Amino acid sequence: MPTRMVSVVIDALDPPALARFWADLLGWRVSFADAEEVDVAAPAEDGWAMDLVFVPVPEPKTVKNRLHLDLSSTSPADQDALVNRARTLGATPVDIGQGDVPWTVLADPEGNEFCVLEPRPEYADTGSIAAIVVAAHDPAALATFWAAATDWLIVRDDLSLASLRSMDGHGPWLEFLRLDDEKTVKNRVYLDIATHLGEDQAAEVARLRALGAVPRDIGQGDVPWVVLADPEGNEFCVLTSR
Image 1 (tube, rainbow, N blue to C red):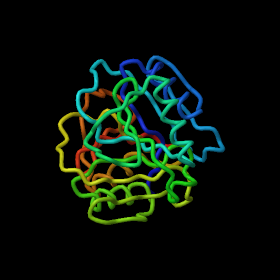
Image 2 (image 1 turned 60 degrees about the horizontal axis):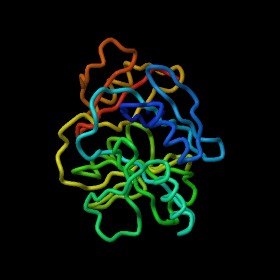
Image 3 (image 1 turned 90 degrees about the vertical axis):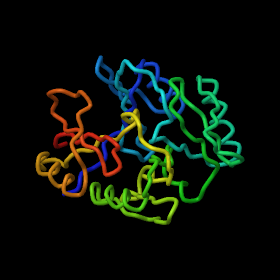
């Protein structure tokens, strides 16, 4: 049975501080905190069941992330207000070559890029986060892998962008955007997925490997989750049944 997406994980030098930035920006809450991770959860009305999870790492960010978040807005005034709130909380404008576009590109206090989008009809019901965006050399192929992994639907597929949406129509889109730059370091932003309640983790790992995932050692040691990489090398974790 396909897995379900559980969280977007962000490596951080200071997980509590970065979690607080995102909680305050989105209007979410810190739902769990210990020395190993800090979780930020959406309110029920936001419609997103996944958490943002911040985990400690010793190394700072050095390259542009291959995964980033796009935030939704409901009007030009709402977009401006969200940009202003982000900057007040410590975000800074960044130029990643976007040129003259209707969205605003910012970086959080640890340099993680994110976009505040202009209002778009397709994101009207996503909640605060419109999309999880992944850089891809072959968007269609990567979307095909993740659709099989998660049972999400491919709702757009062209040369530059492929998009997935949960079958229940809730939460953000998962989008694969064509970019030609090469992956050079472990992703600082990545996905956690989990087997459904009662499903076998080992069997699911085997299924994902048959789809094209490969084992990845990122120094995790003896842990109850399994670290894999998708066909373009993006790390993700397969958690135990839940």
